[in-house]
Length: 64
Ligand code: SF4
Image (cartoon, rainbow, N blue to C red; front, side, top):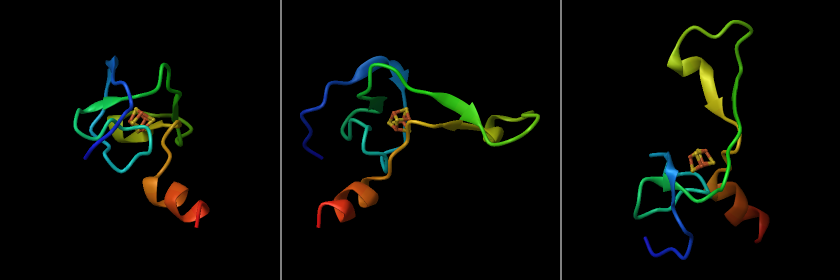
């Protein structure tokens, strides 16, 4: 995928479905991201979320 975004090599990420993902490189393009949890008492990696995630499809659909 062609992209003009600059990878932030301090934030490795494989979530290609996110608007902020660099596409051809597994990095985030943001300077900073917010990490949070949806659990009251997180114990596993799965309990933790990138709260800066924005799905590509949603952005695409919002401009139609
Ligand atoms: S915002 Fe979060 S999920 Fe999206 S590319 Fe950056 S680190 Fe990955």
